[in-house]
Image (cartoon, rainbow over all chains, first blue to last red; front, side, top):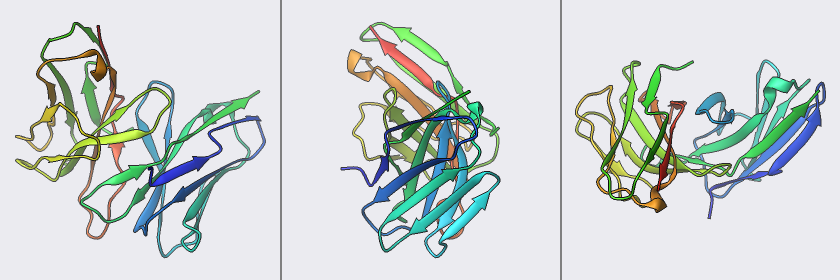
Length: 111
Length: 115
């Protein structure tokens, strides 16, 4: 089973609204990373949050991490049509340089 | 955008052919990775490398092989392609980092279709 599972699987909102997606994982982590993937493209790194951090901001992105619940959330504020993409969380468990990716949330932002 | 390149972007080829997917990065990263991703699905790690002459199998069993003769180059080879190999293949690289995994930089992928 997946180390990271994301919820919801798909999300459709209007431009200007906030989008929140959640990631749950099973084992202890060193850090958790969020990536965006536009259709037909590779993944782009958005933000990294370490296990000893609780919240991190980058522009319109806010990431929280709750290690007691083994969960993280990504909030995109004031969404734009250009934010339409799939968003993946990835966990670093410190095992052999590997990241384990979640199942992804497909975000659709309409005008 | 990161400087990591994959060729070809699309490949449609018949069963039984030998295929090599190319991946090159100009960032001097030690670590490189190959992932397999079906449309709209999660990524599965199939191979990774710590550096030159280092290759390891990933979490998902794959009939492909890789080599790492130069830091910047990490090609993936399928000796005899089958329809079950149809998928998108993503290459990534990352810096070593002292304590934990650094962010990975991805190419745009090769969409492979075996007839």
